[in-house]
Length: 161
Image (tube, rainbow, N blue to C red; front, side, top):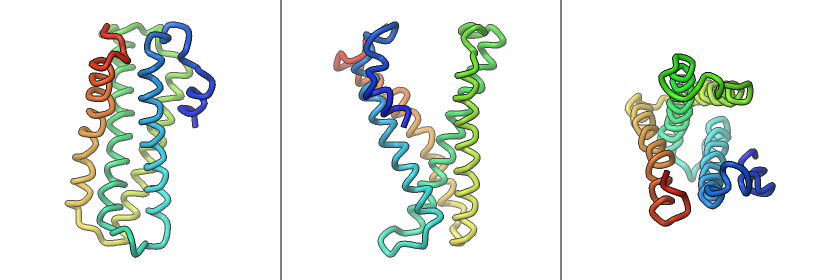
């Protein structure tokens, strides 16, 4: 919902991110789509089994969602530790909103972890499917955090700073 509010309120159209507004629009919609997929997968993991979606597919994706959120949240924690230690950025950049943001993602990761374990046990899924989902997390994060911004820069939507 936050990403949609950002879009309809033109949150990034002025201020220090104004030069990045078009890129933020692309990223906001990409993240919105990923969050919607995550919500659907979470619902599918607690719903009655579907004749149209294989439990193995849900297992891979629910473990992937768990791992993606976990890696992202732990990366944010590591960044905050680096800032607090003076290795990168400034400790002054750590504020209540940033802490709440990281805590939200840690909570979401924990929730998806519960769903992933529960679903795998209920449907007696082999561990290799969980491993496959977990291995997909760095690929998805790399796509969202590295590849897409690089493409946005290449097409001129994001300034190369």
